[in-house]
Image (cartoon, rainbow, N blue to C red; front, side, top):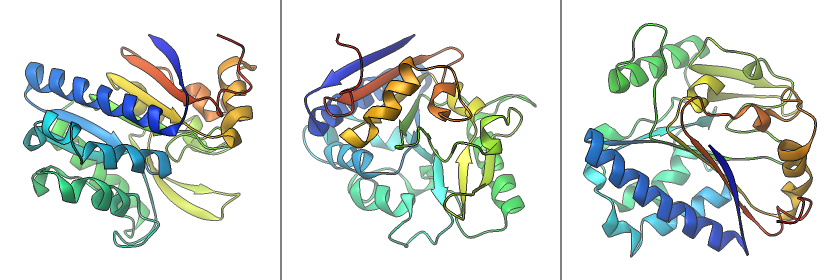
Length: 246
């Protein structure tokens, strides 16, 4: 199931996302004993994490049963100011009682082959899927770039067509850098996917993703389509400016 919900501003988007995090976590823990989430980088998720670390949300999550992973990461040290891990640690993880053994960052500095192998192993040890299977996150958090990318699945890269990998180290030609990302099959196998889109700079891409011709190689966010789960777009008024009226 896919839905889009519009809010007045970024704060309202993040408050809705925090409420959904609490509900999804509570349900996962009640049904399966733990809650697994893949985090996103970016300024809007940072606002969300700060909300979750404070009252009233802080006390509504059984943090000792939360397992944290990352949807993507930059090729930097964990203490680098560009690190997605560092952002999440400072805004959330250092402020809630998640056991350190249940925090699973991506290695931004290793050799590409080692990064893929090691994070594949991390995923398998937690999810224990069958050979050839996929991890099933309770919640996948995503943002969307001005070019329509999600996680580090950028336009024109092999990450859009890769249907066999779980973890990919990909070169982003327009940025001249490498990124680490979970693959589209992993993203689409999640039980819940939340895409947070905020700001007028995203308006054109958002309209193309949701209402334009199907061109996932140009707008990778079009390829986000859960196999058996719920996809919810949470957008503010500025990002929704080009969308048809409700």
